[in-house]
Length: 110
Image 1 (spheres, helix red, strand yellow):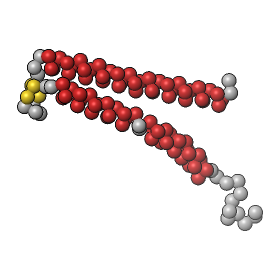
Image 2 (image 1 turned 45 degrees about the vertical axis):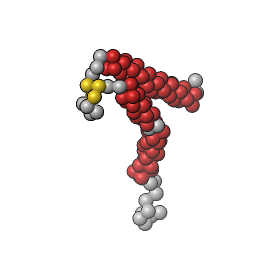
Image 3 (image 1 turned 120 degrees about the vertical axis):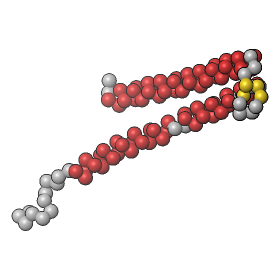
Image 4 (image 1 turned 90 degrees about the horizontal axis):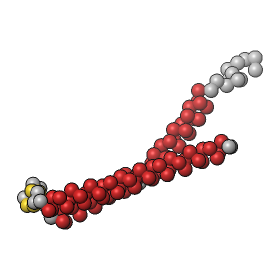
């Protein structure tokens, strides 16, 4: 395979795995939120923040809070991509800066 094809395949696999993990986290939070919420509503569990038992609205509020937080983390992906591109560009720039020229600027024989 050509190097470009290999790199593209690696990028596609990385994107697929990260999206799969992201959706796995979302669905895991769905399951956890609604299972714990249903237990807390069925067996009265005291909500110390509100000084009352948990209600269905509390479960939905926590669910949407976690969901929005996960989507915010998912939006950080392009920022990580930009950081990796900046690291590659920085490596090239530092190699150019550290390079020793073949012709010396202050050499009187040149």
